[in-house]
Length: 166
Length: 166
Image (cartoon, rainbow over all chains, first blue to last red; front, side, top):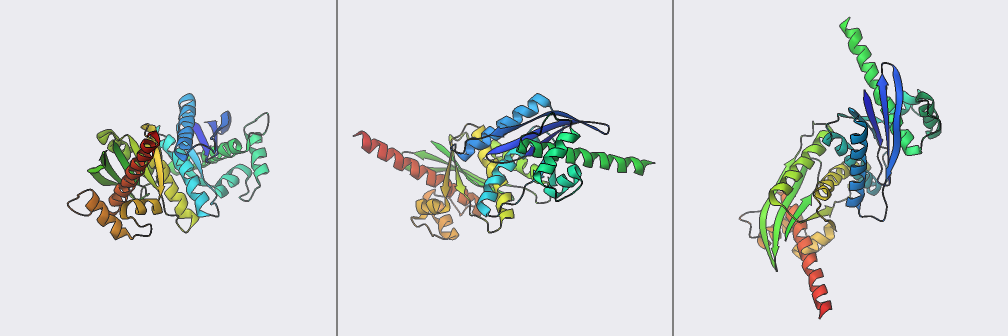
């Protein structure tokens, strides 16, 4: 099963694609879609949408996983971030991908085993879990982390369903 | 020229379509796209996107006008509202409509001639300006107001350009 993880942002949206084969996680690709802050917001949203649509077309993931973003302290930043996050979710649902949401706590717990892990620990664990040659760009690493979180949560659910069947 | 005005919201997104013929404003349609609060956010965004896409297909507007929404007091509401607003803008840019944004102050000034006008005054003026048989639903009236604001701002720009040409 192929999962697309997203770390949304108006300036930089990170994406990470992984395959889940049994208990194994395989890295497929990671990267970012960046927008110019000088562009009108509508155009920046289109850049994010088109970029993610291209990633989806290229890698054909079957599920999307996206972080419930950190709440910005001021409503204006939260509003702007909401535009980017909504755009990313829409790129998913418009490609008929089920979209799952995870809190930062859930992502860190799944990846590092500790909900209050620092950014660097998350990046290191993503590198280790996916056998990356080097640490991925920050937003791309976060996107891979939320994809890993979804993979683990699915594996767990499957285990529960299987044990229920016995 | 046909303008689509939008008043975005996660629960109710209002839309209003008007034609501008010289100095005349003609009402074409208005309505709302509503979503179920029990649905996952991704599905609600798709409902808004598909609904507006259908309005665009039906009425073929050439420009979109959208309000710079009131900033919610808490970041969580602002974040959620941002998702809906981003979705509406994306429905516009994906249909290749230029998207213009106006503040509540600009909209009220354009429609009522007074930036701090109340909701009811705006609705009354929208009804009067467009010769509506009755007051439109609140969110639809706001959408018509932002369309009227864009029409006025365009007429003004045109007047300036014309006077510059003399």
